[in-house]
Image (cartoon, rainbow, N blue to C red; front, side, top):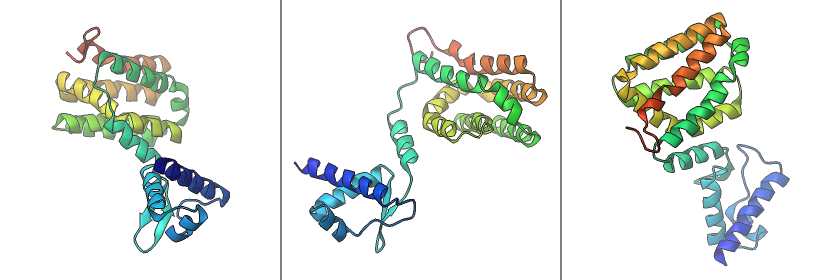
Length: 227
C-alpha cells in the first residue's frame, strides 16, 4: 500500500512539473505544500523525492528545497555501467556491429561536416592515445578519438548513446589494446582513418574503419569470451 502511495506522489509531481511548465532550475513546492497537495505524509513525500532524485529529475538542497535538474541521462549511464555484461564474442559483435552502422555508415555526413580543425584534433587525440602508458588510459584515449569522430556529426542523441555504451566499449578497447601491442596497431589504424577522412576518400575510409572495428574479433573464440 505504501509503495502505491509513493508511486501516486511520484506521478503527481511529474504531472505538476508538466502542468506548471517547470524547467531546469525551477523550484518545486515545499515539502509541506506537497503533503497538502497530495494528502500524503512527510515520509511518503520524502520517499517520492528520493525516487525522483535517483531518476535525475530533482535535487534536494538544504534550506532551499527541491530544484528541477536534468540528470536523467547520467542516471542511465550509471545504471548501464553497473549492469554491464561480461565481455563475450556476442557482446563484441553486437557493439561493433552498431558502431559500424554509425561510424562507417555516416561517411558522407562526416565528409560534409569535418573541418581542418577536426582533422587536427583527431590527430592530437590519436597521439595522446599512443602516448598512454597504461591499458586503461590507452582505452580512454581510444574512446575519446571515436567519441570526437561521431561528435562531428553534431547529433546529441548519438553522443548520448555512445556515452551510455562507453563501459562496454572501454572493455572491448582494453581487451584489444592489451593484446595488440599496447595501442600501436590502433594508432596506425586511426591514422589511416584520419588520412582517408582528410582527403575525402570514401572507399578508403569505409575500408579502414571497418577493418579497425573488426580487428578484435580474432581475439574471441566461437561461443566464448576473450581468449
